[in-house]
Length: 405
Image (cartoon, rainbow, N blue to C red):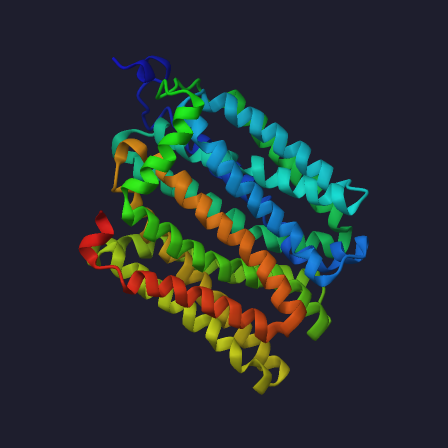
């Protein structure tokens, strides 16, 4: 019997109940939602602190940078220490960071707390491996898929929630409510989860050094991470500027901006469809189709100045559905490629890819805000289209046999 099974008995359907799976999915969703709450509220947050349009983009930028750093520096710890304890510590710190952001009295405190939120919101990346460990082998894919659905739902509903709550209760209430939710779920998970035996004895410096070795060893990892990172620049540029554009051009409040997040429902639908298509036609094929869809969806918004207002809003919704579908499908396909490279290092491979993705997210938030400030919405669309096109070119220049090396 392995050391792991001595601490965590083999999971069975009765042991890993629907309630536990739901709470794991809820925990992942609430954690990752924390990094998206600010996006529909940027207009009113900027007004509170009298920040310029170009500077407001620092809020989501720092949150994404924090998340990237958290994945790179903290996610590998799940292989070294008890995940149950890590979930408790990071969940508690996330609650405190959300409260600090909600009660921020100055612009600099807001930026600092935004960075902190991103750093510890990576608890979602500890919850998913915990679910995989607890699940029985014949149910592991299904269980992890259910928890991932919770994570995608968190991304989807975060903007809707924050947009409506900010409209009627103020933006500070969003962070206070979110902090309470994270804290309750964290305590519940601490109570119901078993202790997890560390899976490696590598010291922390060695864990981090192994990330560089994996990056250099697998060219498929580099291509997948860079392609998805470029698509993430486009994704983040759009969502980090949408609320400001809607307020300036159409005089819409944060509730309407948040409602646009419902277009992300397409992303949740893309995950199982992309996985099934990858099984039949290959993951490399899916990445090409998905990236092409992202390029087309962003390029479609170049026609906005030629249309009346109702048609403009319709095109924005269609574009949001299209690029979100493409980006989520591409992510699933890229994960399929990366996870097949080295099953023994999946957590670290995942950490590397998502570090690059969230660096892209951070870059997109900054560049998108600057493009909007200097060149207007058409400038943001140009930036997003170019970034997505670069991601597509990486996939088009990758031969199928090289996607697995």
